[in-house]
Image (cartoon, one colour):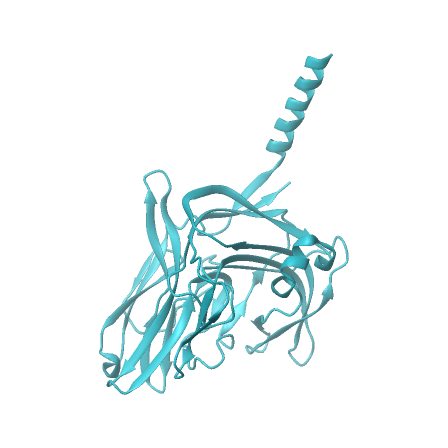
Length: 321
């Protein structure tokens, strides 16, 4: 009898394992990249900067905006082409990196201090965390004052996955300091800890006659990477919680990052980037209309983090029953 029960439990475990299925997100094996060569303005030294985009394989040698959201691509990186007052610059914190013969390439995201010096007089320094997210960056970037005004967060999506799965490793500073570097002012260090992060948000969105975008939060997944992980962790799951997150333990720990106050924006039907106003938690069983996935080497607001953190990811998938 005892052996029969053990055999039954083993069969049940196998059934549960095979009941799950995973779906690789478009281009999320990171074997295809578009390579862009941006010639910076002479006032900045005139060097050529290489920028990468997770997208169909392509090589672009012109200083022109990249077209995100085409050919089935859902991703946009923290890499960007800027043109401010006629001065052109490229900024890159996300790259392909060879992993090994079995897995090919992965995606590497660095947090680093970007410095712009013009004629030895103008000195601009900003802290940029490497980030990959679903949505579009509207190029060229015209100013660093409002980093979200060029971001169309999220892509259309109507399913209800149970988790996000990925392979990852990380290099995270143990120091309890972070850097604030937002432009012309001198960078300063303050108390804090910079950590990598994965965020998944499922929303049901709608738009009113004036072009305002509203949303209910359908599901939320969240994880922080707080220390070095030198070896690859494969098939790592980030669970997605449905309904009111305030009733879960994970919300109590990370309420500001999982709540309804995230600074998300999206393009409305009139072609204007506007705030996505989350008005509450969606009722049980609500079907989403959009998904936002944001994976980054830092979690603080724009231009705040730790110069030197790195997050590597590969094979980003969604998990279903």
